[in-house]
Every structure is written in C-alpha cells, then in structure tokens.
Amino acid sequence: MDAALIGQGLLSGLLFGGVYSLMAVGLTLIFGVMRVVNFAHGDMMVWGMYLAWMLATRLGVDPYAGFVLCAGGLFVVGFVVQRTLVDRIVDAPHEMQILLMLGVALVLENAALVAFGPDPQRVRSALTASTLWLGPIFVDVGRLVTFGLAVLLTGALYLFLARTPLGRSVRAAADNPYGALVIGTDVRRVYAVAFGIGAACVGAAGALVSPILPFQPAGGLSLSVASFNIVIIGGMGSLLGAFVGGLLVSVAESMGAVFLAPSMKELVSFSLLIAILLFRPAGLFGKGSA
Amino acid sequence: MSTLLRLEGIEVGYGDLTAVREVSLEVRTGEVVALIGGNGAGKTTTLRAITGLLPVRRGVIELDGQRLDGLSPSRIVARGLAHVPEGRQLFPTMTVRENLELGAAGREARARRHETLEWVFRLFPRLQERNRQLAGTLSGGEQQMCAIGRGLMARPRLLMLDEPSLGLAPVVLKTIFETLAEINRTGTTILVVEQNVARALALSHRGYVLENGRIALSGSRDELLASGHIKQAYLGL
Image 1 (cartoon, each protein chain N blue to C red):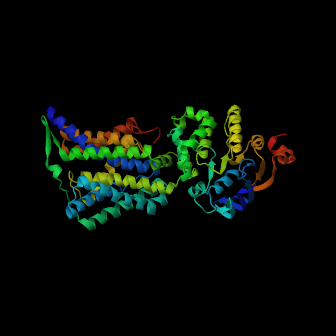
Image 2: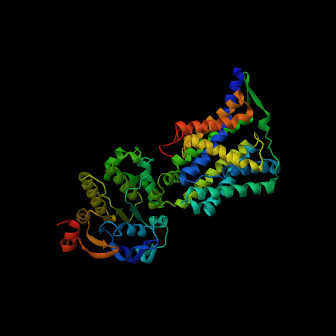
Image 3: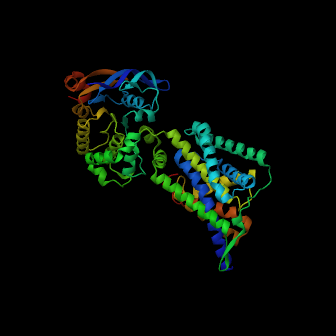
C-alpha cells in the first residue's frame, strides 16, 4: 500500500471530520439539555444545504460566507420547532419523542421534495476548484476551509457555553432542570435556545458541506443516523466526545475507503459503533450509565 | 413591621390529591418564620406553591402586596424571592463559583454580583476555598452552604429554605444555623421549613405548625415552645 495514498486518506478524512463533528455537536447539545434525540437532525441539515444553494444560485452568495445565514435560518427553525412541538414531549417517554421527531423529519424531507425536486444538487464555490500540494498529498482548499470553519464554530459554541450567562444557564438546565427552575431560570426559553443552537450547527454544517457533497431531499435520514452514530461513539451528551468522535469516524471511514472499498465506509463506521458499544458502552467521553 | 409574604387560604395539590388546604400565613419584614410539621404535612408543597413550581388552586399569595400566584417561577424569583430547595438541587458538573453566579438571576442581582459574592464568601469561607471545585464533589454540609449562597446571590427580600438540616452532622448544622441567624440580622427575611423543630424554633421569631395539609397551630417562638402539643408531638419532651 502506497504511503502517500494512506496519508491522503488520513488528511481527507480528518478535514471532512470537521463537518461530522459539527453535526454531532448539535445533536449532542440537544440531547444533553433536553434528553430528546432529534431524529430530524439530518433533514434540518439538508435544509441548510438547500438554503446555501438558494443563496448561491439566486443571490450569488458563496456558501463559505452564506453559512452564517444558513445557521441563523436553522436557529429560527429549531427554536420554533422546540417551542411549538418538542416542548410538549420533553417529559414524555422516548418512544413518543421518536415518533414526533420522525414526523418532523418526514415533513421537512417532503417539503424539500416539493420545493426543490428529487434531483441531486451541488453548490459551486470558487474555493473548491483550487488545491494545494503538500509533497505528494493534495489538499482540497474547499475542504480545508470547511474544516477550519467547523472547528471555529465548535470552539465558539464551547466559549458560549463556558463563559456567557445564557450559555451557563443552558449547562445548568442540562445538569439539573429542577434546580434551574427553582432559581428562576426560564427553562422553556433555555430549551428553545438550545434546540435552536443545535439546529444552527447542522445549518452551518450543511452549508459548509454543500460545495463538497451532492445533496437531495432524501439524504436526511442517513445524515441523522451518521450524527447519532458519532454521538453514541463519543458519549451521549458530551460535546468533546461529539467533536472527537466526528473526526475519528471520518478518518476511519476514509481509511475504510482506502483499504477496503469506497462503498464500505458505512461498514467501517458501524463496526466502530459496535466495538464501542461492546467495550465502552457509555462512549469515549460518556459518564457512567448512558 | 410590614407584611412581606402573605398566604390567604391557599389550596395546592397533585392530580386528584389535595396536599395543602386553607393555609394562611404571614411573614413580616425582618422576621424568621418557621414552618414545621411531620413528613408529608405539606411543608414542601407550600414552598413550591409560593415559588410557582406548583399551581395554586385556590387562595392568594402576595409578596409585598403584589400577587404572586399564577406567575412563573422566573417572574417570582425576579420579584425578590429565593428558594433553597430540599436536597440542595445544585448543578453537580459546574463549579461552586458557577453555581453561585447562576443564582444572580435578576438584573440588579447580576449588576451587583461581585459585591454579593464577596458577602457570600464572608458568610461561608469554605465556599471560597472550594471556589473552583465541582459542586457534585462537595460534602453534604458544603453543598448546603453552596445552595444557600446561590439563593443569596439573587439578593432576595425573602429567603425560603426547605429542610436545610437534612442529612447534616450536628457540628455543620450548628454552623449553618448560626450563619442563617447572621443573614437575618443583616436584613434578609427568612421562611424556613424544618422537621428539626428544636433547631428551627431556636432560630425563629414565630412559627406555624402544619398537620395534614392545614395549619394546626401558630404563634411566637415562646408560645410554641410552651405548647404541650409541640412538646409532645415534635420535641419528644
């Protein structure tokens, strides 16, 4: 096996991992705060991709700038979905939550189908056309920028949660919702903000990946599953776990493509999931029983 | 002394069950008032209703003449009421400092949080030592101090404490009750719910006795201590 090919695989995997991390960070934030699994996560991401596509084709906004608007748009979607729907089932059993979130996913997917048709789309960006060479390894500039921005956004989210009063309230509500209520936190508002931020993460991730991956309305479910997979590997509710898990899964998939076959990447990520569940059921960074 | 908190004939329950009925009580500015009674008498339910955590089915709750019943907990806390709940209910994976700062919820409390934090650290020097430790790793007594400190960070006009003595060693309990007396001397009105009747009455000016969801008895500390019923049922004398 050629060392350059392996190096190429490692680098491509790592760079794409930023997007995986951002998707998983959004999902784990929602789960960590509300104990609700957002099965519409991937479909929200698809909407982020289509928003980037509309901005690019109608207004000529490059997705590497437009991702901010996509994140903002999805924040509103997440906030409204939480306030109007999820808020009713926060304390309900998991199976009821899953039914509702799958319903939201179906509505989002079919709305995209009506609005944009079934054909795959791709957003063009000036950046994706250029490459850099590191010796024998080439670096796709688009992927590099995607990675950089994804890492930056995850870092910004971390700072928001660690340093700002609202961010601290989000963590407090995740830690002990009753305790937060007792000291006068508007927990419903905090929940809506957290859901909005989780959705904004995939909105940004969708926009950032739109020049790299072709997308279509039916792609949401597999993105939801991929995010969920990473969150379990990293440890449910752990932001660091989601971030590291995203990079890990992406590199593993990329290695699978090098050593096995490009179509085998899901095989690799799900094998990783099974291994984690066997040997470390709470996930890499999970705390105790999950 | 003016009336700070007034409950007039409140009824509170869970589903079909009525836990508290026709409870009326009053806390005047500057007082420490004890709400005592056995397990399941409705003490915690009464406090939860005052904070808006449970709906009031009947009756009126007023803080400084303004209606509280029907408002959300966040509105009620903003009116100047802090609730230190049973079991502390801290944020275990956050630091002591973060727990305290989260208590500074209202606008004024947030603006003056540094000053309030210094006061809390003077009252409970142990919290300053444990400043950066995660709240979940504190001992029971330290957790209670942290919960009281978090309540004080709101700069409340009325501090409500639910079973502050629960699960504490006698030495720690003594320290905490001495600090509560000091907090009251510096101008904070206190309503304390306790099963440890001797402790609670020693701290309080007046008290109410809840039995089966109703006020069975009320009076000044000395009246209650002299009551045969209290001696027999609660003090074991």
